[in-house]
Image 1: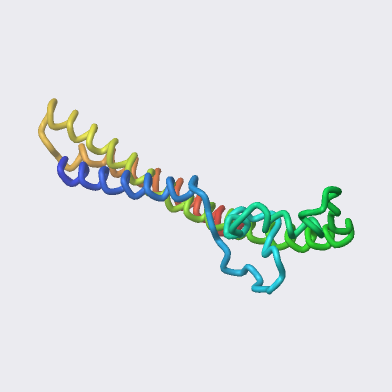
Image 2: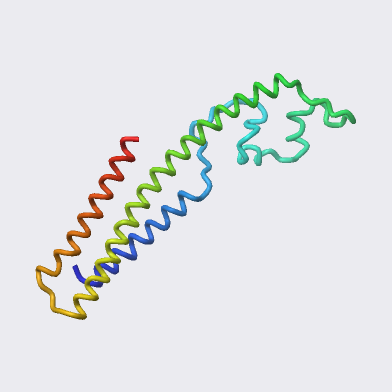
Length: 164
């Protein structure tokens, strides 16, 4: 492997790792399994569904019987409790789905960073060997051994992730 090839592998794997990492730390708007009901509001917890409500008065009207009343008669506690339990159950399911997806993406990003690190080590090694001595088959055994060690570590990491 030449220095240019190692550099290219390093740059590409670093870029993919960073892009995946940004996806992992960014917000997730997973709503694929959200039950479709005509119930209003669609959720009292999930901010993207709350944000679809046009005005604050409309949002308040879900919880106050007569918004123009001075006393602001709030809905019955039992009704709010049922709605909160329902929405909390759905939201906790959604959060678990989001977390599982983010863990998988993090594992893939981790893999790209291992490749990036191996490429960086290889570039350093090629530079040192090129500067101090000529190439031989013996001088390539060290980076191959390092690469195999990183592959083994990555294999164990993937195996652990699949098992869990």
